[in-house]
Each structure stands twice: as structure tokens, then as C-alpha cells.
Length: 380
Image (spheres, rainbow, N blue to C red):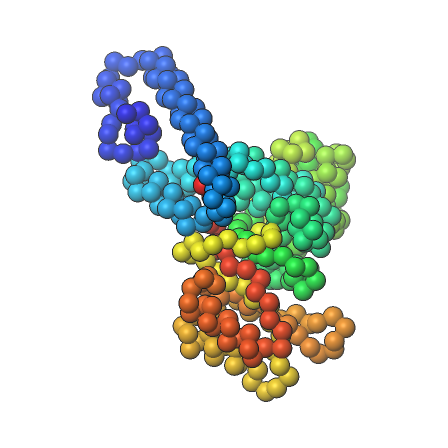
């Protein structure tokens, strides 16, 4: 079958052994394959819609992360390296998210404007077909999700070079939302402008962090050009689109969104610059098999209080992935701790460990359990 050939099995298409096949013959065969692929995509979409109706009737959870993992594992197995694996996953990610959106449209808020790295993280997680709403601050994203004016929000939480994003951590203390997922995005900075000519740039605009992450490159290559900090890379791209003498440090998404030209790609001073983004919503998804659990806790005012909590995790062999402290506003020298651990709240050792932590804390809040790393959601 032709679809078996496309999935990269050991079945070889007959045209590969026919040396007399012309370019026209091969192109005709590709057209036939493309038609079959479109027909199968339409059939998959119909199945997704039917599954959505059955789930609604049975009041089952729409999001099944474990099913999603099964899909990708099966695809990797039957592909067996015949098709580039990253590309295959990317293609099916878009197919899966499109099928999911056929069941129920969702709107995602993010730190805007359009074409920020947060927007790019949202697209990499939810796909191109979702509806995106840019907002002016991280706090606004939290507020819109809490009030259910948007289904999900995308917010940055930490960068591998610059550290934690404190406005996100502080918003968890103010708004009642749950973490639904995370995505790690490798950040590559591009110098862009309207003409693509570096000689036209009289000012370089961007957010504070990209400017800091490209400081050495700017010093060596544009030593006399002033920099202009703005509230987002998207705002910088907008300025560059409207002023031919402004260059912007912006995402790859901004190039297309604002009709800009690349002056120089990859001007960051250090490679491996990665930002972790959180997906926030009204409730956390069920167990996927590769999960992370986040807590917000306050310790009692006594010696060794934090050590008691760490001992609970160690005794139960729970892997602590992150711990970050933040001062409590209005209460001098008092702090809360954000804790990430590997595992899902539905697992016995995680649940019992968290219950023990709750009993010895002055403040305790479960922020969510969710698929770890670049696991992306399938609602099918």
C-alpha cells in the first residue's frame, strides 16, 4: 500500500527499481501519493470528530497524554529511520493539533505582541491552527486564564543563561491556575531590519535579555550603534518594520510576520541558550508516563524546615528537578519556594510525599502535574 511506503517501512515502491522512470512519471506518482495523503487526513479528521463526540457523551477527559506518547512511539517504530524522525514528529504534531481543534476551538493568550519567542513557543506546542491572543504582560496572561477568557496561556519561566523569570513565579502567588504542560525552546537571535543591509541600522532595539545575550556580538560588529530596550522582541520587530533605520533582535517568526530581512543569523554570544515556557490552564492533564509535578510551599519559621521537605523527597526517592525561592510581598524576610519534582500526582510515591510535605508546611499549593519537556498534547 502507498501509505506503507510513506511511513518508511521496508516495502520499497516499485518506481525505485525502474531506471526508465522519467521525471514526469515520478511527479505523477507524487501527485497520486499526495491525493491519497489528503484523503487519509480527511478520514483521520472525521475519526477525531467522532472520538470527540463519544468523549463528550461519556464525560471523559479530552486530553490523554498517555495516548499521545503511544502515537509518537508507534510512529517512530514503524518509521524505523526511513523518514527524518524530527520532521515526522513535527508533521504529525501539526496533524494531531489540527484534529484536536476540530473538536473544540481553543484560544491561547501569550506575552505579545505577535512573533515574540513566547508566541513561537505557543505555536510549537499547540500548532498553527490554534487562535492566539497577544497580551502586554505576563500578569495579564494569568488573569485571562484564571477568568477563563482564554483556554490556555503561555509564559516564560526560566532561561538557561539569565535564570528565573520572576514575574511568572510571582504571578503563581496571585492567580489560581494550573500548569498543563511545558515546552523548551532553543533561542537563536537574529539581527533583522527592513532592508537587510547592516549599514542602514542606526539603532538596535530588543528586549533587555536578548540585548544582554548578544552584547559581545554587538560590541564587536556595531560598536558605535546605540541599543534601545523595549518590552518584547515582537515590539522591536514592529519598530523595525516601521523605521528603516532601526534594527531588531528578534525571533524567526518575526521575519515573516513583519516582512523583515535577515541581516545576520544567530548573533547570540553563547550557544545552547534555552528558555523553558509553561502552559497554564484551569486543570492539569492526567498521567502521561513522563511527568513533572510543581508545588508552591511556605516553610515554618524554625531551624531545618527546608531540610525536612528535602528529606521527604529523598526518602521516597523522588527526583527534585528545581527549587527557587521568592520573597513574600509585604512580609519582610519571609519566602515561598517553588519546587519541581519528576513524577505525577497520581503516582503513589508522589501523592504520599506531597501529603507529608503539606502537613509540615505553613503554606502548600499544588500547581499541577503535566507532561515533561517537549511532550505536546494530543486530545485524541
